[in-house]
Length: 138
Image (cartoon, rainbow, N blue to C red):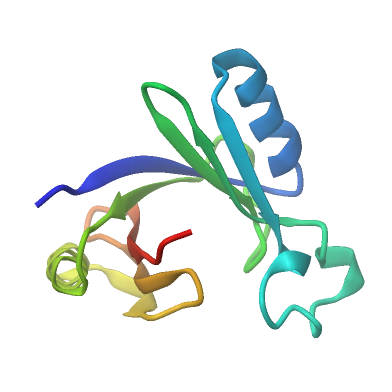
C-alpha cells in the first residue's frame, strides 16, 4: 500500500493568489482548474466561474492542494485544512474511507467523479476533515 497524505487548504475567494504566493516561495509546478473549466459548468453562475475548483502545487519535497470555498460558506483563511489521502485502488479507498468515517460523519459519500475512480469526504470522530481519492490519470 502506497498511500500519500497531502494538506488541502480551503480559501474564501483568494486561492489563486495564495497558491501563486506559495509557488513563488517554494518553487515547483502549479496546476489550477477553475469552476468554469470543469465539465458540466454551464449552469454555474458567472460570478463563480473564476473561482478555483482545484489547485495543486508540487515541489521537489512536498505537495499542497487547495480550492476556493465553492460548495459552502467562505472559511476564515487558515482555519480550514483537510487531510487528503491519495490511494492506489478502489479497494484501498473503500477500506480507508470506511475506517476513518466510523463514528464520524460522511459529508460526501465515496463515489466515482470526473477526476477520480473513487472520491469521498468525511469528518472523523475527532473532528478532523478528510478526503479520500483514487485519482484517474491526468
